[in-house]
Image (cartoon, rainbow, N blue to C red):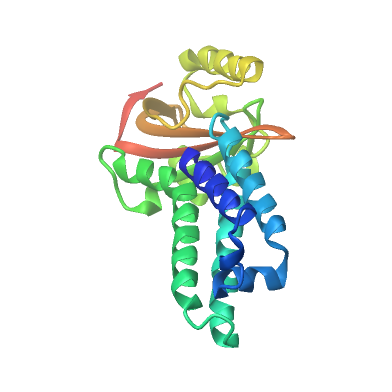
Amino acid sequence: MTFVGLLSLAIAASLAFVPGSQRGTPGYATLAVIAPLPAWAAVWCALGLLCLTQAFMRSDRMAFAAATAVLLTYGLIYLLSTFTGDNPRGWVGGAVWLAFGGWIALIATWPEAVVINRLPGRRAASSTAVIVADSSGTIQSWNPQAEALFGWDTDEAVGRSLTILMPPRFRDPHTDGLARVLSDGHSELAGRIIPLVGLHRDGSEFAIGLTVNAWYSDDGVTYTGVIRPLGGRHVRSE
């Protein structure tokens, strides 16, 4: 994100201080038809500052979305200029900008995919449980794999605390951890693969690998947990 921010500021500078001899070139002329070059410079400058700001924050979704949107817009403009004849070689720049935008979009979704594939004893993707909870640890939604893994139907699980999925000995540390995140905005577990013990509805315990990500918005913190069974055998029965 820092790289994208610095690159955006460099592009903004190149648009704000275009030599007079280059303003008539097809690339700059194509952009000037849509908006004045200083306006484009302002867009890139705003994007750069947003990326650099969110690079040091726990939530960077807005920066990723803005960067992807600007890059894809640039790519489409250049491609269209090729078909209109305003910039015969615009397809080259268009391909570069679109590829860059696609790369940024891939980075935005890459961590979760990498985490799932790195979990020990991995199985097919169909065994991956995904659970979404709010800042208080109340389950908001989960997928059918979570139903199969923990034994609770979706209608039964939604609205309950995440503590129903863990043995009693882990519930107090879990509650304390949520309180710390709310107080200081920092989670030591986010993005890590954590070996834990899950609790089935029937009271049996089993080994799991958990990866949790925290998403920050005006509505508070939302947690997404990606869970895979490790070996699939119960480790304890009560």
